[in-house]
Image 1 (cartoon, rainbow, N blue to C red):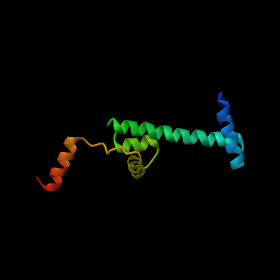
Image 2 (cartoon, rainbow, N blue to C red; image 1 turned 45 degrees about the horizontal axis):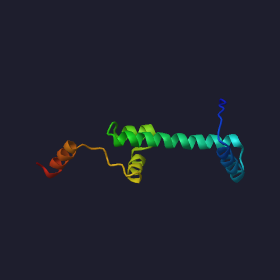
Image 3 (cartoon, helix red, strand yellow; image 1 turned 90 degrees about the horizontal axis):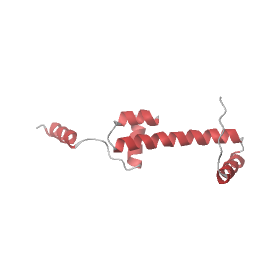
Image 4 (cartoon, rainbow, N blue to C red; image 1 turned 120 degrees about the vertical axis):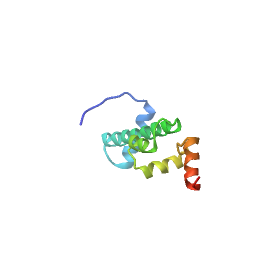
Length: 100
């Protein structure tokens, strides 16, 4: 492990201490857990944003977010992000289904 230091607001430090007391673990463990959660949330937000902009596929979004394809589909639903498919692709799919 490496050591990283950062200055934080008093309110944030108090929140961390509250969590330390509640969980009964040391401050470093709490900060590591909070950083891990924050990074996961950041990656998910980034992936969803790129999907909304139709810059990546659902598969790629899942890779970015560190999720499975099915988990990513669930996140799309949870965050009201439409499945990224163009109008032309949708028409082609419907024509194939209808046998035209």
